[in-house]
Length: 452
Image (tube, rainbow, N blue to C red; front, side, top):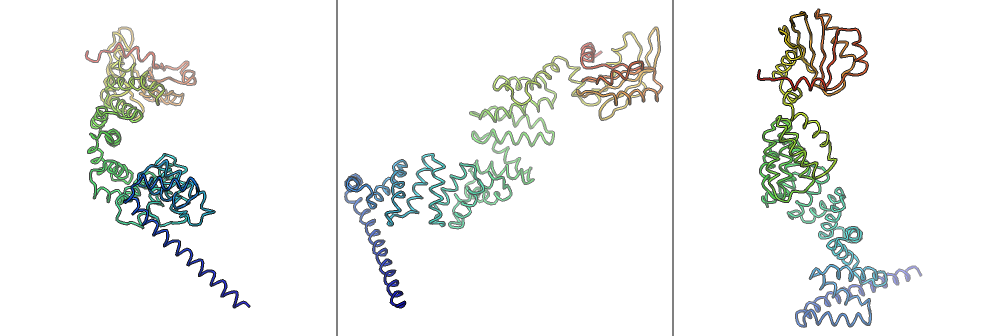
């Protein structure tokens, strides 16, 4: 009995296999016939014939597949989407429909129509049926890149590379996906292979330079960025990166050149242009060219209100630009600053003879001890100049007063470009210490002539 059932099952399976084999052969023959018919009758005649069949039977699979093939060859993606979506939808009742192919072409059509989420859904269905399909892995990888799913895109492109190891397009897409996923060291070999075959690919060259920067190959990357500076598409970004690298090593003059090249390029994106002008302004400040810095800062203000700290910078440096001594106080080198401090003391005491006895330069301040002689009095004075614009607390003033006693000075003056705290002001009550804050300092600086 069991033996008879097994024989019946085997026979049934053989019959099913034969039926599907015959159907497959028949479909191959039909495809050959279709190709021959197209050559003989032409596309329009074939379409009319298929449409007649579909008028009687809207789910006529051979006719749908024929029209689908024709539209796919012409890249008429809207019609391709509709045909293969219909085929996929009826596949549950029409087992002869090739589900993997229908889902694949649905996905490709959706991708080209900008329906990225539909493309991903369809291609995921196709890849489950046919995981080794090169075209499916490539298109799915592109769609995932559009959705910023770079890690998943990397997986698809790696699969595609395993299928076609010598395909250079795969190298480019895999390298770019790894780059976008911030796998900078991993992306370099693939980007290099692309450049070996196509040295003129500026996009890959730029990505390679950024990756080299992130991997500690700054010297090589800088050469690439400088090479790309005149490029109309990637030049602005290359100028920005080269400028930042020059800034890091305090090479402000070359950083300015980088940024100025970018400003001469056509059609620079607004966001990149704002970054370039902002960095150029700060670089000009580093070179003590306040007037030029203000030009760029005001251009940023006009283009985009509230960009970073531009408003505060304009307020600060507009004041500095009107007072060269103020610029010197805040921004000059140590020797010029000390010379200004000496001039300050001479201006502070009108009609007095000032003899400087000692100058000490610290990281936060400069101290000057001097003998001051007027027609009415003589005294040993100490001055401490702070360049910071922050609030100076009572701890600093206590330290100053202590040093005043140690050096046997009669009086002391503490000066800052910022302000002193309330507790600092309270501390000096009854003590021979005067505090000079920003407003009074600026007034005195305006009276100083450094050329006398």
